[in-house]
Length: 385
Ligand SMILES: NC(=O)c1ccc[n+]([C@@H]2O[C@H](COP(=O)([O-])OP(=O)(O)OC[C@H]3O[C@@H](n4cnc5c(N)ncnc54)[C@H](O)[C@@H]3O)[C@@H](O)[C@H]2O)c1
Image (cartoon, rainbow, N blue to C red; front, side, top):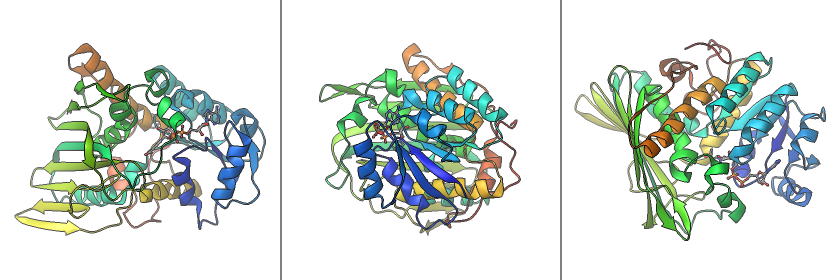
């Protein structure tokens, strides 16, 4: 049974702990953050009982108290903390993005490939039940062969959204610590991962990234990013902040997301993400003249519960995780290409993928029914496409 240590007990860690509840096969035994009183408060809030508290990730990793670490720290620390944990022979689950640049990403991919333990990039959007439902329907051939994906992120305001502590905003608004814009790089990672799930790695990206002053900070909105795939498929991501847009149905961020995938014989829509704009069912498909609504769990927290359960199931089965570090490197390459394109004012080529191809991933993701294991036949970490 893995003994789990959480490194970084900030805003999003509240959703990470949900997936451990009710699991007899893993236990959170240690927490790490910069302040011990903050950690103790979190342990009490999460009802963890007695846990070891560390204010240095190296002390936690070398303590002999944990088998698996969940790393949930600001982006500029990902490479160093994850690299150290792998070298300590621990299983690692690292929140996205893998790193701030491809050199650091490649170093982590190499370390992971040499390790006997699991190294997993945490991308909860791939476990959001409406996304799993859409991927399942696409995998069954409902819309034919996918030809295009459209992703839309709307951010606005919401009295229902949770508070975001200022320090959690501060590192995000600085490209040196975030790696890019909050909407197109930080949150954008999720959208590039979704596009990767549907169509694989784009060959070329052309991005227009906006700059809006929000209370003295620069937000990368409105932005549009176009993707072209080998074989002719296309994709787009549009990220827009609308200061007066009321977002309902969220107890997390004041944001909503939608996905539309068009295939050779039909279209599928995922109509929800963080929150809810409009009243549509979470998933709607249209094929052969028939519109069908598909109901499934749609609370955003379920994406986190599914992501954690998938990791524990894969560990128990000795199966490779979703995402492997190699796949995380591919998603990062697309996100970085968008930043590069916007700066250059021209389309740029995206590095060739080193992880698995999307079709293999699509058929091996769990069904939207929580608790279903991934397919253990998938290749190990760092496997070839
Ligand atoms: N999957 C999602 O939807 C989602 C949403 C939000 C955040 N995230 C990711 O989660 C990570 C954290 O984001 P957040 O919003 O929780 O940020 P945050 O700033 O609220 O939390 C980060 C925590 O790390 C702690 N920390 C900083 N340096 C540390 C160190 N050296 N050792 C130990 N702890 C340290 C901070 O004190 C803070 O408590 C980022 O990778 C972010 O991209 C993902």
